[in-house]
Length: 82
Image 1 (tube, rainbow, N blue to C red):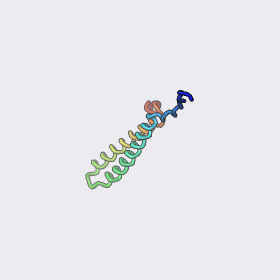
Image 2 (image 1 turned 180 degrees about the horizontal axis):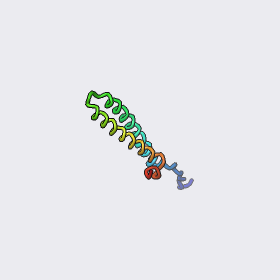
Image 3 (image 1 turned 90 degrees about the vertical axis):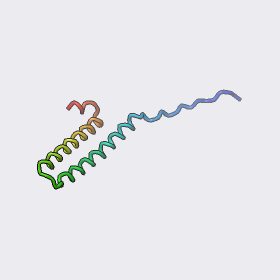
Image 4 (image 1 turned 60 degrees about the vertical axis):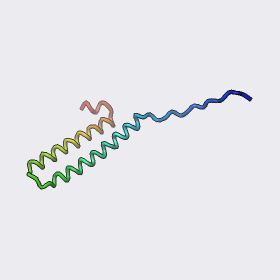
């Protein structure tokens, strides 16, 4: 009998950065859907036309910003330079 204990190599765990990217992308998709729903409700508000247009325009800007963030995650640093 031997006192030698064979060591088994453990499989390396998946990189946490991959999970972080997926979690952030998932959150951004949820935010995007929510912003779009809010935009639809804002368009139907019974408020002065100028106020509704401004609100919807700002929400559309927010949607665009979230889409750009998703592009950056999907394409890396190059997408943020556009």
